Image (cartoon, rainbow, N blue to C red; front, side, top):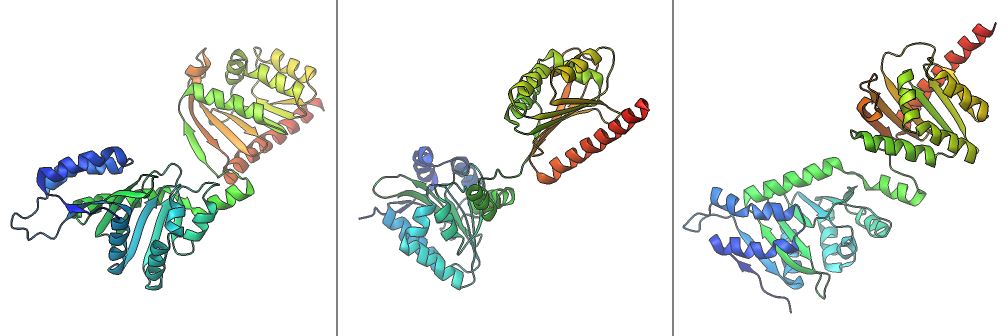
Length: 364
């Protein structure tokens, strides 16, 4: 038999909620920790006339019963977040699923944020029959908001009764805070259909990342070179940029990769007296490395690395005259976005063709 629920007021409520904090995931614990402040800012009417109420519920039966009671008066929408391990319970528990089905038939809008994983894809697909579902990596929350007027936060025990504790409130300040949280997560999330397709087809989702740490940028460049299978394009907008990479043993890595793999490596760079010997040696000792001098000075000082036409790393050259590599590196942009990589590849190919034309003209 499920345990009963109780209503708490004043310091009793604050003390009782404090005992639940270890069971609630972030950010619910943050919201509940602030409940004392919110309660004192928006106190209940001493005569009891206020309609705002916060309750702590115990036991699976009571939580399910209260959830279904809430469904019966829902008119406009249900918004919620579900942990990736709990989607199964949501769609396989008949009472809850049938409740959502009735809401959908009434025209209620159902929205859900969840992390889609290989293990829960079948359950997320089932959820998508009724819900607008979006994916957000790392979501660790279980809560629902009804008509922007009432919300329930619950913890999962993974014991005999999965729903062990819950907090339900219609306090305006708390509901608005929870709704704001949901909208923030919803706007950051992506359609679940995209992630499901990527998982099923083995694709990596498109991304564009900005990196600031020179050590991380250099490490990523090394990883891209090592992971390349067919071709590498490298653009050094200044001779010093290339010289810095020789000092950091990045050019030695290119030698090793060229020797060990059947891979084409093309390098575009400005050439001066300090770099011409290194470049000549690269070309003479490795038939799969080709070098072209940049035909003109670029307006932007960038170092670009493109791996297999699938990944691009573009690094700002901040202080080209500095002797150490890390002092010269600025921001970097890393992406597998098809349009971004295509743009960088097109620029490289255009400069490569220009360099080839000028070199042929000199020979004539």
